[in-house]
Length: 143
Image 1 (tube, rainbow, N blue to C red):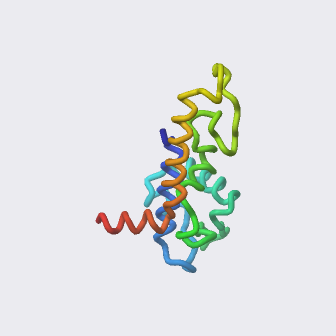
Image 2: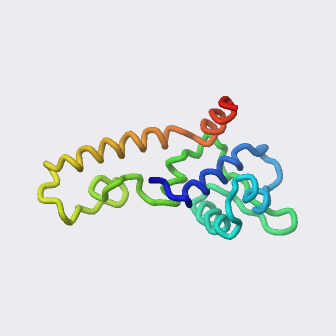
Image 3: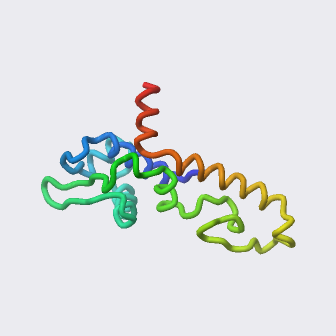
């Protein structure tokens, strides 16, 4: 299940993806209001996304945030991984944080592991294949 933190991150990034490329940085208060995210929580999320290289921040009176790459080069999967960590539902199928399950008798024969690997693969395919530009275009098409 997607956490509230991930939903906030996605909403903030989707909002920033709709802003004019090369335009002025967007103040945090404006992002918080548009994405319906509490400002204090948003500060922490934006700091993580900035450290991961998805955002540039600018200080001062005219400061704020902007995407560091075009929206078509940032996938929803990348954002979720920064906020949540691996997409896998169980650690034994994670590609980035593999850990054997402590209660599994035979990993190679585990039906749960095989199923969760398929879930991970399809989840990654969809999320990594959907950019901010794709998501905002679908949002606009639905309106």
